[in-house]
Image (cartoon, rainbow, N blue to C red):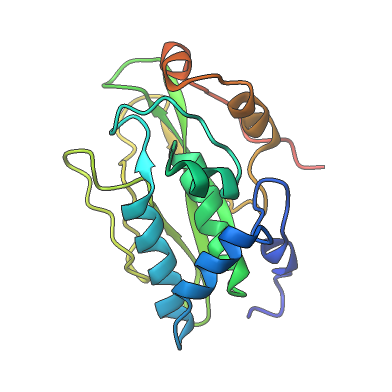
Length: 199
């Protein structure tokens, strides 16, 4: 690990990243492999392929925490990232959260916040990867450290990729997701936020 970077916040359990939940911990243990890289890839592939992106699969549930996402088997990109980071942290791998501001569909607003995850790998540093699922035509995200492979390019006015890796999901995002009763409600008013102000 980088001596100049304190990675301890990226290893903590929290209300959202609840890798101390029995089911999350058991899954994490089943995905552990002999090397850091293999373990990280196993966790990524499992979440990408086994947790259904709610929009792709016409689901209405909006779980937020890692354990609720695992129990429900679906979620937005944010929920999938919460579970992925929890699985990494349960295996002793520092994990965090990254975001993009994207248009909801096409070149004009509304905008929405897209979330993905980052894992700290020895020899690579932070590697950002997108486990939203390859169930949408045109998306083929793989775990390829050294080559970033995100689901969405930034291509329209107002879009951006935030470069920071946060130790916890944005608090306002968590609040908004928890207040969202259904995917239909979200689709009617996608969540578009600015990064939290650093204290």
